[in-house]
Length: 178
Image 1: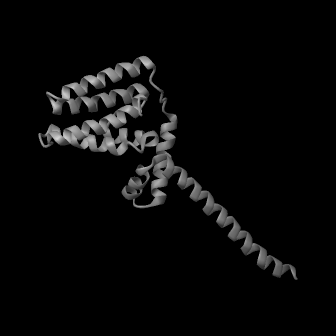
Image 2: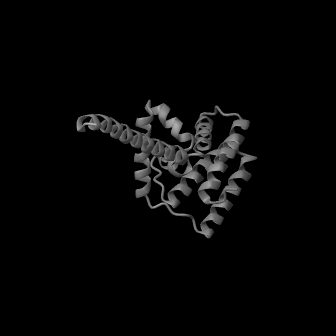
């Protein structure tokens, strides 16, 4: 077999192997993002319009998150926040709208004390998505009801649902998730 024939066979084989390796690496990278971000991955794909753009966005979020000084709450703070949550839940009976608003405020305080930026709701979603992508839908649903409640447009049943949604994120943030 001549050298040119051998090269004509080996070069395409090498190119195919390299491309297969790159494809496998990209697949694994995407798979890790899907595992880490959970349902937030598909939501980001939908909002950005492509998997590549979503991958880029989620990697940026992860990099920003890695630069944050996120900390676990000490036992004393967890206890204090749990007591505050119990108080908010008790207020729900007499003032559901106020309790849902207080639950939203409590979530923001917990985030701040853990080291998350709390400048705005959209930023909170981006930062929470890195570690709490699986409970982020709870936060979105609760926050949406809280917004409508502020306009007098939420039913008591929706407010009750919002409290359940806030509780899911609260438990995860405070470290009391079951």
